Image 1: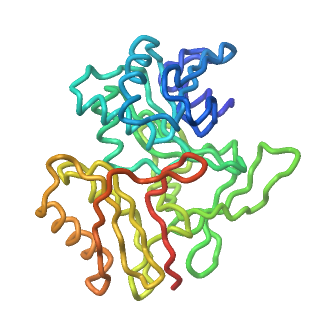
Image 2: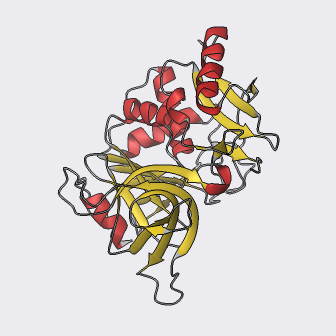
Length: 312
């Protein structure tokens, strides 16, 4: 919590600044169909908002509550906040204006960031960590993703199975805050790229810099020859007629894209999307675009942008 407090202080927030949060907590029965879809935590001055009731019918209630409550910060899953953002943008509502929006627990995708920036009119800051609390990372005021070095020692395991302090590979972390069950050189399960120590951020902090979080090792996409491909979400960024998308790589290496289209989505957008994916994954991979009305989340309420069954 102290590391979160420091992150929040970078944006002018205090320990009890008014906040609203969207997480996987079950705070009401699933069958509830009328307001309130939230609970208030007086001790932390925190409006707990359900991530499981964000249906089209309920979105106006969420927006109205947030507008009245006027949180100074909003924290939550990117997929949940994206639903609110899309409602604001599509209905022409006034943007909400907290000091900062902090996304966490899921990969913040490029098209989600664009929508959040327009709907909330404030800095969108991504926080990166894991349930085991083996490390803590976040973006700073300049948008650079940093590991917080007092929390953990981080390394990467490269393709030659060598440990290094920089480069691209599997994230290895030794936590410094857990006195009961410390994890030493713990293989987190994510693939990241850590910058050289010579690279410094404008914020002035000598914190290790993460150049890219490619995602879970189990969910990395591969070309047919076994070459791993980094994050593909930039191709969904703006102007593609896409509301949400999930990429699934089957056991044969071929790709299915589950896509929630916007009103302006057409055959040209589809053709362009397939071409962009093939340019990165190879033309020997078949790509099917499956138009759907919604994409189911996992049981913990998170959105999984990539699912891979492909074994190299």
